[in-house]
Image (cartoon, rainbow, N blue to C red; front, top):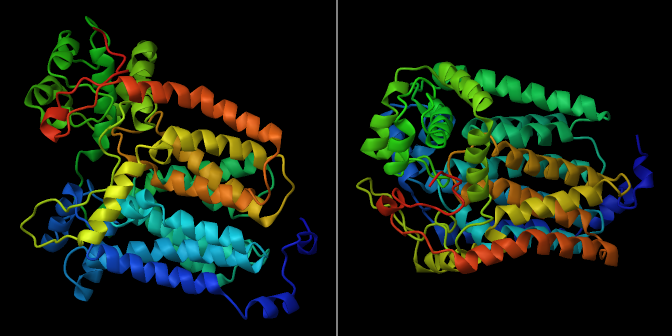
Length: 494
């Protein structure tokens, strides 16, 4: 264990008393929360928001949308109608986490880095999506708040008080249940806060958390929160089985008729952009009809068998989707990136923020077409930062940065096997985690060698992306036409 006195930013009682006299980051963070809340009040409602709100007011829940979010929403409704209570909760968690990290950096003589952390929170795409009442924004808010609570002490090389540990555990628990794939990001982050030295022990602990959450989330959702079971768990195996069938003419896939692949391609059922045609296009629903009576476990077993029998088809299915969700070789105006500037039309009196918020979202819409909105670019940055962190000496900022980078890359890696849609909001946590890790690590100018490596990696991966965006035709803008769109790099037979 490194002696805390060996770290230049470690706090002595005298230094703590002296620096506590001025804490501008806390004040500015509170102002940014208040300003964000005023700007985006009462929050944006999407189609998913409306569907979940209907469950909230009717008290008929299912697990297609996170039951824990619905129960929190019900608990907060006495404070205000509609989306406003959850908007306040997710913005509060967002700014609390960033502000606590910024303040901890300032206390350890890195005030400039603290200001940069708050600037990260002001990036229009990140803050713009945090104004949308969705499970993704709830995940970010809860995970950031928990991280900030722990980091406030760990960055100063101090033990975390028991009360703070309990508060962080509750927030992490909420984040783990509010999004099905959150465990892949949060398990390594939680383990990163635990004093486990050996890499094998850290991997084992992370896998144990993943297994426990996957095993317990169903009973918690159904028995504790009273949500009915939906078919949401079957979407992943159905999506991939359809992808395999569309790429293996004449083969019997999961007991489907031999002509299923041709029928799926003819109706544009298999697209790397999203799984929606399989559930919304009548011909696609009919083609996969034989799968309707099968359990989730059966479908996953059949997917495993078919992936082993037809590995090329399965890998093509997953590679095409991974390219789309990482937004690498895609058109410039791929939908699903910009945060909404209007709520979905509804009869539930869920309103819209004002014109200033719409202007903010317009700026965010332009920015997501730059590398800020390209998940693959953040993945490359996370890998480079991870390599750099492994070569630096141990310190509290390095330990937090490693935990954040591992969290970001673990979630992104999970999309190789578990993902059915390409919306940018699924990548908000990895983007924020990578940006914060960069602030923690880059306390000095990089060397010329590192700059050359970064430039080379950017050119190698970024040049094809730029060429694709310059040459590929934009997809249709409306949902109904998007269901019939043939995306590039779909890796489907012609």
